[in-house]
Amino acid sequence: MDKAPSERTRVKRYNHLAKYDAETIHGILDAMPMCSVGYVFEGKPVVTPTMQWRDGNMIYWHGSSASRMLRAVATHQVCVCVSIVDALVLARSAYNYNLNHRSVMVFGEARQITDDQEKRHQLENFVNKVIPGQWDRLRPVHEKELKATTLMSLEISEASAKLRTGHTEDDEEDYAFPVWCGLVPVSFNIAAPIADPRNLPGLEMPEEVLAFKLG
Amino acid sequence: MDKAPSERTRVKRYNHLAKYDAETIHGILDAMPMCSVGYVFEGKPVVTPTMQWRDGNMIYWHGSSASRMLRAVATHQVCVCVSIVDALVLARSAYNYNLNHRSVMVFGEARQITDDQEKRHQLENFVNKVIPGQWDRLRPVHEKELKATTLMSLEISEASAKLRTGHTEDDEEDYAFPVWCGLVPVSFNIAAPIADPRNLPGLEMPEEVLAFKLG
Image (cartoon, rainbow over all chains, first blue to last red; front, side, top):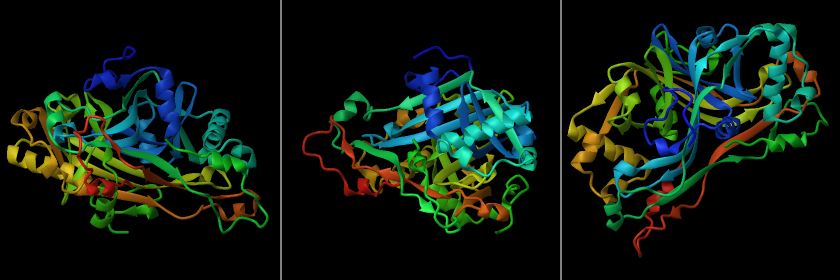
């Protein structure tokens, strides 16, 4: 376990599960594009699910320029959270029931990216990180789309990961109690792609589409 | 689309995807025990991943009585968010890339459950909603465990769901652009349970363990 970069990132509960190294944090962020962006709106907490992607030590998310969420987070504190379920962990007591999971929390001030060239570059990243090379196949981005897109960024400097792996951890005296325990492993199943019925005749699926994975 | 129960639950962006009926909201909450609890801590947003379960029109989550999160949310505003990815949606433009997903946001004031009988009842629900009938097989809960467990509840009154399904929705003029589009379906794969190496000899797995599913 490395040292937490700040007090609010220091994992307080089950802190033996905490990791603060970039490799672990980046790996979890890269494995799950769906994230939860937490922010304060009119004094109250709001958590919005959206897609994130990472480029170096920054994470990005985007949406409509008219979005209430995106307007609220610009130059404001946010907490971006990603979590992946890996297994159900049955225990001998209700108290020790758990999920094996990997999660990341990133804290900081969100910054809006307004430079058109940087926006274009990050939209390219967004597309290519999901399907490698896909950007060059797409209809090029219109100027009005760039204007209608608000792009937010957050530096991954105050971040922590939590990873729970392995078998049940019961109280030592409970191992004599006759209840079947174990793990029920969970993973993502990526099914065969389904072509859009409106695809032009003769178009072939790029093989990189098969590279898409989660978790 | 029903009417939103309050202004903050009214889905503003892509509001044709919004649902406000209990059946839809309960279905999504029941399909995914991992949630994100958003709250304000020292003026800043924090999003904590944890397990939730539903009983009627309430959701519950729990943790250590020493938890910073649980202390911060008691009688405070929270936003609990659940989201499930169903497919990657490739589009002809970066602008229309999407994820098919189901998500729920529940807003309100979290209430701590302090009554021991109610705590016990909800821990039973927590266990049995994951594996039916499992509570009666477990080592009974100790008094000290009840004390060490903080149980939070939130009424599902201000809530909204967002469901994106179906194929790509591109701008009409883009359908002539020669790029292969389609859906890459995502679901949860539940693998065969793995017995705890410390199980007592001769114990058999309850068949209800095979009922566990996500999504």
